[in-house]
Length: 139
Length: 102
Image (cartoon, rainbow over all chains, first blue to last red):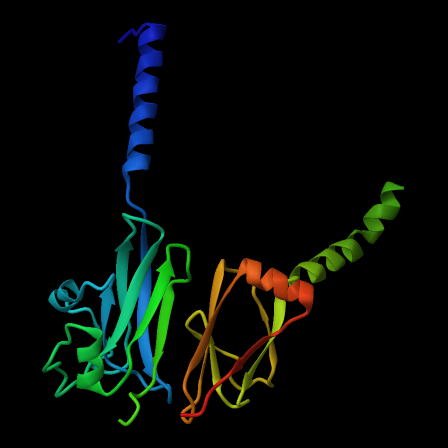
């Protein structure tokens, strides 16, 4: 197949434009590992809430430390900017299950007796996000 | 001349290697009060079993999240970015976290 130099140039230009569009259009994504402990460094069961979206967190069962000491890895998209907000919401576990999934920071505090942590995480931050949750005063 | 240089090459390479392995300019002393509190930097437990205070190299990431915890105290944390660390290096300031009792 013989192509003219002009045709070749156009083909190269089109491919370059396509690549540039793909690069510009892609949403930055990064994997983060979430974990939570209490002040005595014991694993603390939590619901991991991203950007205050409590419904999605509950639907996707973004729990950590439900069945012992583990962590939760989430691939996070950054469509609006280089930061997201994570709320590490403590939950009460009965027989390996969460009887009342909190829908707000206040509910998380009231149901569990621990205080949640809210943190702003950047795209370039280290992979591991560890929260240390103290007990609610009076608990 | 070249022979002389070649003879000294192992010495030069050793010196370069040692310099590369040494601490960077962003190393700071990390201390915590009370001294038996646990310290986590970017989610990893640091300095377990080592003497306190300890030196930590802050040159390998853009931001550092330093946390300290103790069963009898409120946990404490502080963010350190490269600019803050640079200022601390210039002023000779170290990283100190003081926990408040519960």
